[in-house]
Length: 318
Image (cartoon, rainbow, N blue to C red; front, top):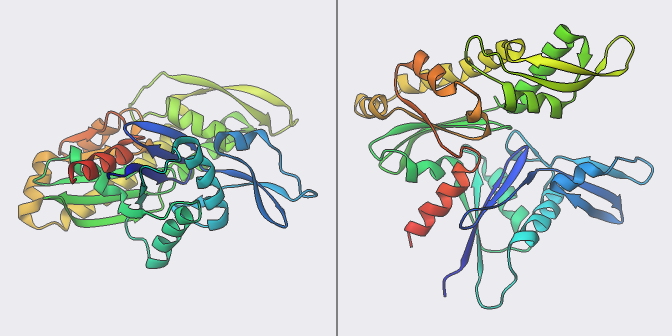
């Protein structure tokens, strides 16, 4: 009897679960209480409703950093809550979990991913490198895929369904948010939250020259400490965004320079395929095409591209 298959993509900022379509996308956080053991109070977006309290030993925990699970117990409690919401308990069909993992993990880091889901109550777990989730949508002859996440950015050249070369770097959305916070403090004399910086990045972050987009966020004045509205222009945060994506372009260029000529010819013809939350930045395909002189395409649903692709790939393999 066929099993019900769910793809789990545990990212540094968001966790996605996919089954015949996206069924969950929640913040990768948990609000926990430490008493006689660890107790989950809320997971995902609901966790932000609670306030940390050192007296009652309650705190908000982000169990994943730079794509790596750093607090396995918290991650297991969080995943148990997430999976309980979307996976039906049935005695008639088994449940199979496909877990997307970054490229280049150590054996111990892979074991942590697997045991995290095992301890959430699911024993049939298969780990699959995230970049393989793009195999169903790229040209078989060879393409460079880049997944730009909030915890890390992954690069892989894939040809004939095999990874030719791959690497991952800790260059990501969260790092860029820190730069945006610095820019806002310098230009507007106000301190904004990481959440506000992320919102600016996602909504008005742009690689186009002369982008006139703007957005209002709230920050705390550095002089009198009062909260005030700040009207931020896209041009104001363009420098850190441009710098970050130039680094991604440089790494992509270095990877291309290492390829055998036969594979390089195919990659030059079919180009780069982008996915991940960071691929949504305005103007990225044109920016990369300008610097690398090869075709660049962004997945129409970059946030769920990996989970959707893994689900499709394993379904076709049956």
